[in-house]
Image 1: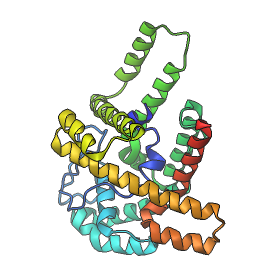
Image 2: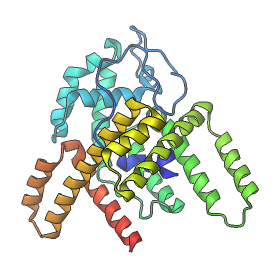
Image 3: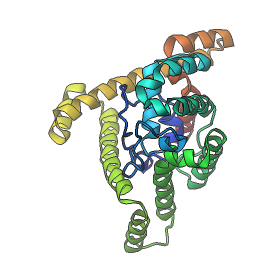
Length: 299
């Protein structure tokens, strides 16, 4: 369920390396995942900061950060953004976009310091974590900016919590549970429902991958079975993700072992720089905490 709607997006996805593709953004900003139609079209003469606040704003900022490349120095990153912002936003909005992008960098740095929920399957723990996240976001952005950047994801997260609450009510009959779930989904806007359908497909693929991992299925068999279900192109993308995931966990385990062996802070910092990109370093602590939680649950 969590994989489907992404209630843990804030400390796994948002702290991960930038996923948005590089490139110049057109005058009309793209629609962000989970959002409705673009609310405003940015014209050449529109200099109001409000013209930035379209549903594609977060995609545009992520593309700008992606183009800037990795760095461990937030100030250096901000200086690089100043040289790139005109390539990603219309000239009339470049000044406002740069000011917002600089705050977005500060937000991303602060985001890496948040701790994951104490129990990812507990709705109350998730609500507390999401409240902590929203407080952080509103420290960096106005209410209007918050809506443009995070509003669509908030709707999906709230829906996920509603589903979790319904699933945890043992007194409901199967029919009552299905009706309650349908009513919760009906509250989502149409685009969010479409995104949820796509997310369910991703969740099915994630379950298949987990089954492959548990059974020790080799790469060739995975590729063949995925190609039959999803097509060759999608199967090849999933194979690349498998490789990246294994590589990430191998590096994470190497770092965890160094911690366990009592390597000093200076040595750990040097190892972090060797094993991880600056963006990956933002999520090391959260990933290790999640690993520890999963290990305790398994016992």
